[in-house]
Length: 32
Image (cartoon, rainbow, N blue to C red; front, side, top):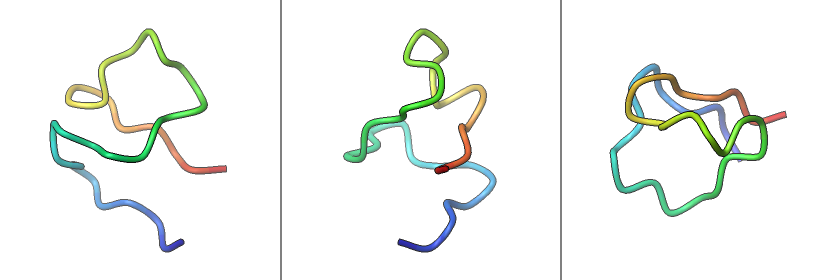
């Protein structure tokens, strides 16, 4: 999948694998 924008939507359907403790709304994690 393509890289996410700088500010992903607060209701991200795709789970973040980097740091689940950090809210994606404040700091978007890179999809590695």
